[in-house]
Image 1: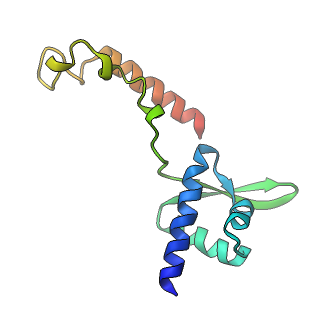
Image 2: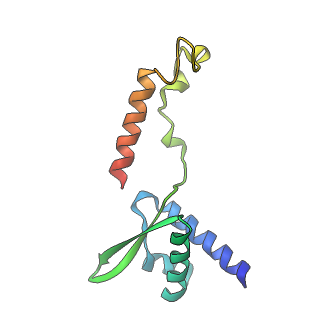
Length: 123
């Protein structure tokens, strides 16, 4: 029986991760996995206690519920597609302590600032 719960918790976590930065309402999630609200609440509380998800109280259609958001999200190729290092002409000369270094690269710093700003806009 414990194994079944572990598989369900993993499945729930994957669905939450796939929902991205917008998250998913608990009620929608329970419908997806065909679980009762009691079962679902236990799973979400366990995932929150483990530090894997964040539960945010939200009013939806006149009822209080929770939105579940994964603390670690799925990576996609889009998240690093425009990193400047990929097409940098000085890539083969780049390294810590070299003339060209990731610690002093203006293009890399600007890119990191951009993705940091975009990530803050998601939450």
